[in-house]
Length: 332
Image 1 (cartoon, one colour):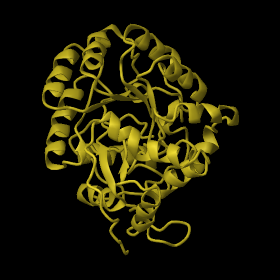
Image 2 (tube, one colour; image 1 turned 30 degrees about the horizontal axis):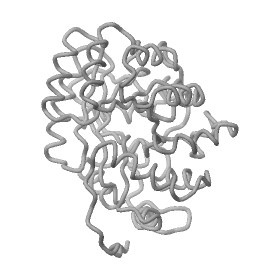
Image 3 (cartoon, one colour; image 1 turned 180 degrees about the horizontal axis):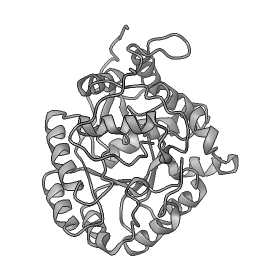
Image 4 (cartoon, one colour; image 1 turned 30 degrees about the vertical axis):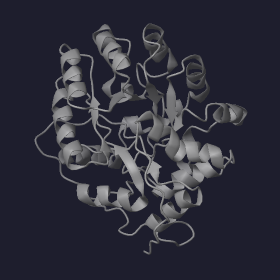
């Protein structure tokens, strides 16, 4: 879940361990080919992943170091990074998976970081056209100005991390920011659930206060709000612009510390047009393909899978419909 507080410092040394150079799924098929087979079988043009992490390399290395050290916000869970690769390798791998659009989820843990991160993300979006231009925010003086600047520069999605930032999303310093983003119709992926470890302001109540003031805000609740799934479903059913992303939900890893309640399965079907594929790539302790298989084994039908894995995200971000063509053959 990329939950951590980053240490300050001019450099960040990468950890020694490397992810698998040629990831293989449980059947022994090379993973990029297996991922493509998944979405081709559904008749999709690819995947739209709204929860992937790209950030300045020294910052990302600190994130990986936090996971390696089992920092408190990991819940003390062993968290090997599957895709510990250089930036260009990670973007290339998402393309080999057939991900049409992805994000650069980045976030500050203290005042004074957000504007700098937004500057980096703007450059990343320019050199990575399949990345949805991502920005972030923090409750601090000047937040409205730099958020407006990011919007004017073409930001298409924002990331808010209530747990890592340890802030109340209903903080009055953010009120004009939420109003600006609601008016612009720009989605915000927000980590506000209490998994894998609770924070001072995690849980549904702070977010409910924000939505009461800004009911048109396009919040995408990260990780399905785990472990408070049903409370966040309540908010999605009350507010038509609230969505949820699948990141880590339903996977074997997620089920160990935040099992999804069986009684809530019918609500998954009912919210099928507002659930979006998210994965937490590259910071996941299992292959990318496992998230897709975890969704498939919910057995909610092909139409639900198509919507979650591509169509809902494509609609939210206004992605063009690709021309009809025969699926290419890929060998690994």
